[in-house]
Length: 296
Image (cartoon, rainbow, N blue to C red; front, side, top):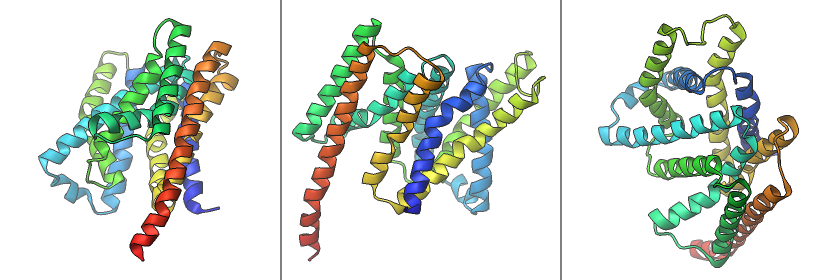
């Protein structure tokens, strides 16, 4: 099997299995978990960027670009915090829905912000996904806010990153560097108030908190390797590994409730994704002959 496919599958499998890791830390306040994730991720990324000799170049990045990455940093911080809170509060299944619908949210952002046009089958897919969300709203008496929040924050993050000029590793380092000072200040305040968990009475928790840095960076490195080696159409298929694993963990490991009515809502989203993916494959196949003729 292509090494890029293996790397991509491994990255998405790790992202899907994150719920298991975060649940080991469910006794730690969400804010402190996020603080440690940012601090230790920044440390790992700083070491990697420094070893590549690009640290000095990043120090000279124009203020406008830093501002762009600051916006991205805030969006990914919201996404990380919401996800960690969700999986440690018994909402793993709903968090999986958020990442199932993210590609469709990306499509709608493209229409609204970038004025992109959708093909008829794509509109049907978006309509089906919306019907699934409406169905789940009726089941719970309110919209699936966790799923919508995850999809909106990550989709908007992706939109901002489309305009970001730096390499993925450099960009992520800049994002965590923007967040590291407030994160470290928060952790210090928690420690001084006696509420800090780190360096308390449980060394295993300390190790797990430090490990969030590697946990964050490793799948990103695998993902970067994958996108360099395989077509984006393959990456688009692989991305559903993560929410599928989350969904199965929610049902089989964490034993979250999942009714027939909820299944109907999820089924609408799944059918929408099949239609969307199928339409994309057909469109790409039709484009290939035109590209070949243009190159001839």
